[in-house]
Length: 371
Ligand SMILES: *[C@@H]1O[C@H](CO)[C@@H](O)[C@H](O)[C@H]1NC(C)=O
Ligand SMILES: *[C@@H]1O[C@H](CO)[C@@H](O)[C@H](O)[C@H]1NC(C)=O
Image (cartoon, rainbow, N blue to C red):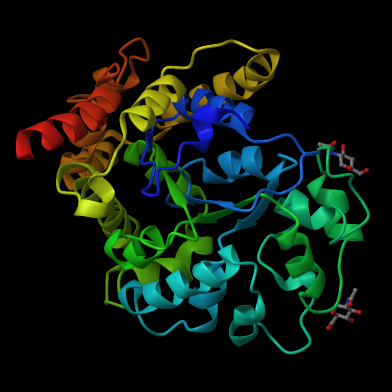
């Protein structure tokens, strides 16, 4: 574990990650996690990968999950949302937060409320996406130092109850949860302020035009989640995806404002070392072979991220740009004004660097400005 990573910042790391750039960021962070053969440290590190649907968080989750020091769970909040369907996101967020707090502490008894009778490890949402659940002591299939195979894990790994899951969790130095079900930060404050958690947050965002196009492909599978996001409001079927996107875009603005523009005191304690560390990870120094391995995916991801430009009707693009105007400008996505501009892939729609500079310069000037 490098000293830089161990800097004791008991606040959070807040990173707005943009497609492509995300890969670089994670490789660097990934490097800095402790190697698998070192014993778990006393103070465990807890990471929340906060994102939204169809934003690449499953991939980033995998980058964490495959690391030998990480115990990873994908969207534990899914259990809350599917068990208690009726209310909206606002009512359920505290339950999701408390669930996460218990899981960070490797207390899985909390899951009992949300599981069916006689549940198994495989009842956990996407359990096979967690390498830790495919490895000892949860399962004998994959050595902890090896990359796991989801298909095989799903077939071969299971056990009654969550005892082995809990046992496994205790053996890791890092617990990483990915969650898509928060639309603000306020409900998470108690977690930030808990010194035992030492929580870091990675906020992953994606161009809303790419998200809507991706959501359109599998709209049906979002029905339950969409209804909860929209607080069970009656919304015409043709508008559901757009109204959900609007909520998601609003949440980007809200989260960004909270964390960067108007942070509460405990979020403002950014140390110089921390800023330095963040600068380094976001500006991707050091080109190791691991990083090159990820660049293949990165290139593919880039193509995927541009797919909406040829496949999404311009009228839809305009509509989403309208709904997400604030978030897009905040995050550095350029709008297109015509179909021609949309389809000209040589026009770059990412405002270069601005999102990073925006984030950290703002944090800095906020501090000097207010003190
Ligand atoms: C996972 O295992 C299955 C079954 O053995 C195999 O067909 C597949 O190629 C493996 N996937 C990867 C990514 O290695
Ligand atoms: C998992 O649950 C199913 C249904 O409850 C059961 O038939 C099966 O034996 C369980 N598997 C394990 C490994 O306990």
